[in-house]
Length: 193
Image (cartoon, rainbow, N blue to C red):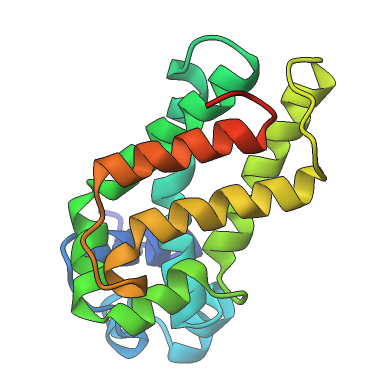
C-alpha cells in the first residue's frame, strides 16, 4: 500500500481559485486565499504580487479569451473588422453580470483596477488592441490618420467611458452609447460614420 502525497498548490491554483471567487461575487482576501491553498502568505505574494495584480490577472484571464473569440468570429478586414471586434468585445463586457456586480460592490476600487494607469488590465488591453491595429496596417487593410499607439489608447478610453459610465458619469451604461463609440472608432480609423 502506497501513501499518497498531498498535491501542493501552484500559482495556477491561486489564479483559478481567485477567478472562481471573483465570478461568484466574493471578495478576494489574500490571507484567506493563502489559508485555503495551504500556503504561506509570503508564497502567495511571490506568486501573485498583491491583490490588485491578482484581480487584474483574473480579469485578463476572462478578457483575453473573449478577445480571441472576437478576432475569430468577426468577418471581414480593415475598418469593418476592427470595429466589429471592438463591438463584439465591448458589448459582451457591457452585459457581463460578474463585472457589473464587481463595479457596484466597490465602484472606486473597481475603477482603479479597470482603468487606472497602474492597471495591468488596461495596459494589456491597450497592448492587445495595438497589436490588432498594427496587424491590419501591416496587411494594408487600414491607414489610420494618427499614431497607432495613441489611436489604441483612445479606443480603449472611449470604451471605458461607455462601459463604466455609471461610475464615471452617474448614468447607466447603454448599448446605444456603445454603438456611438463604435461610430467614433470608425471615424478615428479614417472611415465614414
